[in-house]
Length: 121
Image (cartoon, helix red, strand yellow):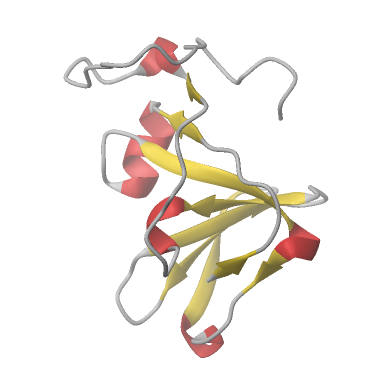
């Protein structure tokens, strides 16, 4: 996967994301569709309807989650683990903390929000 432009990241912790990702949290980067490109392996990218207006995409070869897209949204939600290069990203906030798994310990001073970060969708 490739991305050009400015990065921002949020750590999402809620029941639906734990089930969708198979982990205690998901590290996602909102990326404008016009800045998003799958460089190689497009034949392996498969999607499924996760809800009436949301499609989650994954690698059909290894099963890794790649990104999700809500119908009509300008951004995709790229899974940080799908980026080919070593991430130089740093989290900007912890979101959906109202449903954080009790065994997840937050050990930083980043802002924490019970749901989405105010002003973001």
